[in-house]
Length: 259
Image 1 (cartoon, rainbow, N blue to C red):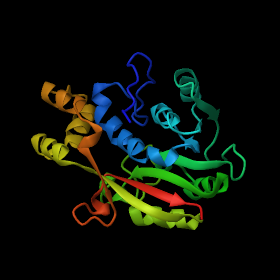
Image 2: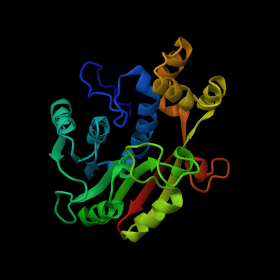
Image 3: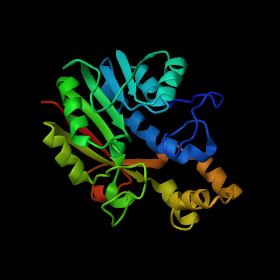
């Protein structure tokens, strides 16, 4: 399946927390999120899917190409209006993730990518996911890895995050809501991104963030390298892969099942 390529002319504003496609300076973060949608979209084939916290909506649209039905839920009014207008195959609902506006056992898959770290009551949200899933249904969830995203800290560096999780902490939360964790996957830089890390002072992430925070213009070489990043520059590795330890990953991706 080809990646989504929305036109640049109709995008939501950059907030620092919502990944917007079609903007060269955002391309690293967009591809880092997109690779997870592309890797897990087969779990949604011919299923009724809830994308809980859809952001710009490109992921819900991608899922809609193979799913039987995609329900997109977000609290933000501007995002809901944008998705309803831009992605007509997505059935848009506006609501709170703490009390999902769906009936018990009404969906086959819940998708929740890069959202749970923003929620105050993560356990309540996972309880709600369990409630709306049919028996055998799957929760596909991703979040930044606390160990690498806010190293050495219990409180997040990102002021928009309420609580970040390690792989062990995510597993504990999921199991506490009744899920069985079928897979824990880490998102890592692949060979080409590791080369770009070395090229840009050890971290292409820091090279972007340091300049953006300081308001320093990006050099042309950094701009070009970021704009050229592809989804296959990232590596998704199972938790037991020896050469890519889960605690060294950038993001965590879990596949959890309602038994």
